[in-house]
Length: 584
Image (cartoon, rainbow, N blue to C red):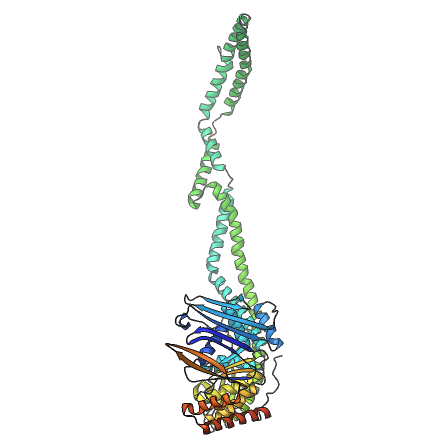
C-alpha cells in the first residue's frame, strides 16, 4: 500500500506531503485544484514519462517521493524477483526527480534504478484506472489480459509467450540462413575450386625467389663454368699460376729473412696463403664441373615461374600470401558449412517448437473458456448492483486456426484466442461489443464491475487507483459506487478522486484538495479531514458549493451517517467472489 506521498514543484503544487491510510481513501476538491496532478505525481513514481514542462515556474527541479509498504508476502517476493535482489525492509521508498535540463533520476531505497524498473514495479503493485484505462478496457487485447488475470492464467500465458518468442527467433534465423543459402552455396563452390587449384599448384613459402635464382644460374651456366675453370687454372693449374708465384716468393722471402726479422713474418704469411689459394683453386675446379647447361630444367623452371605469376595475377596475392590464403580457405569452409548445418538444425527445431506452441495455446484456450463464463457471471452480479440488472454480459472467445506450417503461420502475441466482451445494456437490444455500444455511464459501471471482480482475485496489487470513476454517473448510482469502493477497501487500499459526495461519504479516510493564492503565486494544498464536522462541511460543499446551508449540512451529515452504518453492517449488496480459478 502507499503509506506516504510527497511532491515538490509539480505545476501548481509547491510542496505537498500526504500520509495515506488503508481502506477506501477519497480525494475531493474543486476542478483544477490539483487532484489529477497528485495522481500524475504517483504516475511518475510508477515509471510514467515525465517532462520539464511539469516543473513549477521558478523552480529548477521537480521531486516526487513515495513510501510503499508490503502488506502481503506475495508482494515482497514479486518485487524481489523484479529487482533480482533481497529487500531488507518491508517497504520501498521510491524517488523520482526531473530537472529543467530534461534529466530524469529514479531512486529505489536511495539506490539509482532505471525508470523501466519503476514501471515494472508499478504494474506489479498498483492497479490504476483512469480515462486512458477506460479506453483500454474497450480493446480486445486488454480484455484478454483481464481474463487471464482473473483466471490466474498468467503463468500459462507467459509460457506461451516464451515458446512463441523462441519460435519467432527460429523463424527469423531460418529466413536469414535460407535467404543467404544461394550465396553460401556459390561461395562454397568457389572456395572448393580455389582450394583444389592451389593444392594442385603445390605452393611453398619462398619458392618464387629460389626459382628465379636457379633460372639465372642455368641461363649463365656456360659463363660460370668458364670463369671457375679459368680461375682454377690461374690459381694453380697453369704455368705461372698464383701458387707457383707464391712458391717462388716464399723461397726468396725465407732466404732474405735471415737478414731481417720482419721479412720472416712476411715469409710466414706467404706460406699461410699458399694452401688457401690451393683450396680456392680446388673449389673452382669442382664448381666448373657443376655448371652445366640443362635446357629441360630451364624450361621446367620457366613454366613454373609463369604458372606462379598467373596465380599471383589471378588472386592479387604473392606466392607466400597465397600459401596463407590457402590455409584460410579451410576455416572459411568450416564457417559456411556450419551455417548450412545451422539451417538444418533450425529446420529440425521448428516443428517441435510449433507443436509445443499449439499444445500450450490449446491448453490456454481451454482454461480461458472455463474462466470466461465465471468472469461474466461474477461481473453480472456487480452490474445488477449498479442498476444494470437487466444487462447481459458475455465473454466471447474465438480461436483462430493456425494451420500446420510453422513457417507460414502468423504467431499471435498471447495465444490463438480473440476475445470480445459483449454487452446487452437493455432488453430487446442485440448483443454488441462493449467498445461499440457502451455509453459513458455504462462503461464506468462495467469497468467498476470488472475491476471489483479482478481485485478480489489479485493477491499482489493491493493498491487500486480510480481517477474520476464517477464520470457520467448520477448521485443515486453514486451511492452504489461508494458501497462498491467501500467493500473493495476492506481487502485493498483504494485511492479515488471523486466529485460525488455520495461516493466520498463511504471513504474510510477523506482529503480535500484546494488551491490557495498568495500574492501572485498559486499553490495546491491537501488536507486530511479528521473530524466528522470537517467531512460534513466538505460533503456539503460538494452538494451545493458556496450556496450550502444548514439544510445542506444536515443532508451531508445524514449521508455520512448512512454510509457509516452500511459500512459497519457490511456491504449487503456486494457479492463475495467465488474462489479463484487456477490454471492447471
